[in-house]
Image 1 (cartoon, helix red, strand yellow):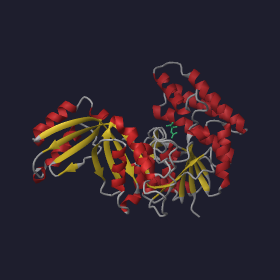
Image 2 (tube, protein in one colour):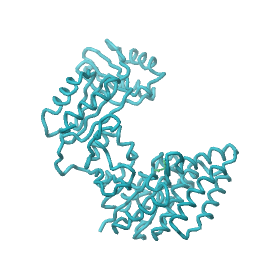
Image 3 (cartoon, rainbow, N blue to C red):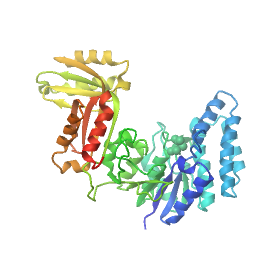
Length: 439
Ligand code: ASP
């Protein structure tokens, strides 16, 4: 039987009670063989995540300032967890070593990684499973990118020898053996990498929410949960997905067709959200979710017969590329193209960009429209149903929302709608109500 890889986030491991709850979840299903853990998160509203405090220690130590006071808080948090679980691990010795390393000038990544390291040592001891260090399996190249083939091979070879293991999230090592971390929230990536390397049947990602919701609860009252979503849909909804799952975490498992199940440690009975390669079951709604973001700028270029100029597009795109401004989307019509970019990305560069477009592309007109919000309406079901767009735009019209631009992805998986920043919330609510009965 294929294993299940489970990953628990910091909010599930904030104190001894959290560790105990996590252990119960692991023991409940013997297929949960590989357990990836984060560093303890906030235990209450007032304190800090262990990783943040370790980074504080690093900052202080690197300026030759006293970091011991902050480290004492970290020490107290871990000691309390150890005592609460009544484990035999010599935590004092482990903590002393980490403190010495920080004092001796350990790198930023090394310091940051120690929360996961100690967390995994505690969990391994409490569960009675071997601790297997990710530093032995996950390798980074000199640019800080994970070496995929070496890593998957090492995970497979190492964990083949262990029926069960607890593995720290967030880090690996580079060619010199030094610790390198993923981006913040990177234990999600470790979980995905372990699931892939061990050819797991499933990657369970346990967190403090019951999965994804169809819309942002700050905008829509009580939005319905998403029980299942495809990887492609999730990518389109990445504006909201990133808050629940580190975006990079989907790639290792997606390539292998391993589903991810987002579940809530505090409400294990909730169905959560299953992220799957293909949608098999028929869902109640055509729509999977609505997400969006404010503050985009639209630069529109109009030129008669621009399509006859073979290199028009290339010249236009290269202006943004050479100014290092990321392009979000490019809706077009026969004689015009709009380039949508995040406002933050173009700040301070706009004048230069417009000037360069004038020089290289000689447009008939060139306009720049500020403060646009983008709303992504996503659903695999849209491919097979007619009238979806009509419903979206009728709802927006009735709500008095002026649509500034529309772009339907060729995958027919999403419709992207540009509205004025001020209309953003209203637009999301109107679309939600048009598709969800009783909303
Ligand atoms: N502890 C790390 C962070 O706070 C990694 C993680 O929890 O995923 O970002």
